[in-house]
Picture 1 (cartoon, rainbow, N blue to C red):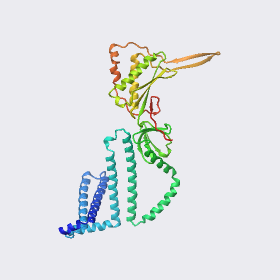
Picture 2: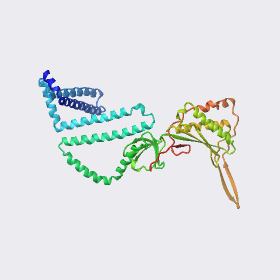
Picture 3: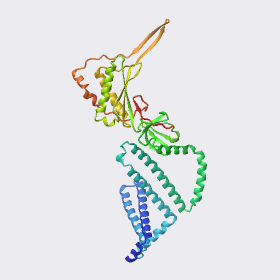
Picture 4: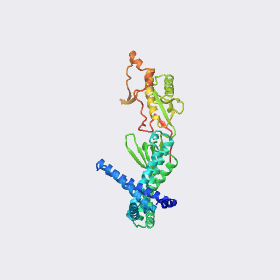
Length: 416
């Protein structure tokens, strides 16, 4: 027995046959596990566990019996005979269908396992251009590979059932040509999605606005056919790629906070600029916010004279997707600092003209400013710099509802 076994194992073809037998046995065991998992919602857990153990024993015995028959070990008659019957069964049409389905399950799970290895869970929260591109490409490749698996397994099953796959593919190609003329929008979606991926215009995790801010949100999924956006209120927008004409990306490479504040015309502009510069430098020197800056704050000075007051502006070049949190922190600190410096932020003013007996009567609508009283000593201490530098609630990093809001501006990427 052993000399003949060694002679048989010396042939490379036998090793390939054994590898195929083991692969088919593992595929069948995996297929049974998947089917039993579907039954777990309707059957008692203990029964499912017992069936899994029984199925593992059956799959292992069938694999060993097929291997014994493949090695030609007739000295083990029980396993040899059972292996012969098992191989004959799987050579039939029904057996080939089962084998193909089992191999498809293995390939499907292998694609999922590989994609999780490429993009581990720990790196999903790290927002970098590499992670955005990797997550996007992995999702597209995973979907494409699964489609290929389904097509190949479907053709193999049809061949096992006696269907002429060549004639079927020829008919499908003619039908596909006819359908192609009526599915030009679908073809346009696929080609547009291909170039979006190729040029890395945006990816999963980016915040974008589509078609002049008609729709905006965070990209949750990007395929060759469509882009899925999650709006701030939780609404999911599904946009065919062919309908995307212009894209504004708020998280590409770097972002910028347009820090603006208005003061009244009666205020000392130089003092207000000093406060703006102090708050900007304070944010830049803060250990919590310093890592988000890519450059020192740029104080523009007086940027506009509005009907209500004088507008001051500074620009902060920051990391992508950090502009909203930093803008909110600036608004909180500048309000406290202006109050401490005694500089008023203007209230809306409106005027109306009423014609009485040919003489216009002008009425000015001005919001009364609250009379400021000197706060007690303990309240003055509460308004110290320490209070200004520490927020009772950390500012949210969620984007603003309108990506084109005047308090932020982003480095945009547009595609015509």
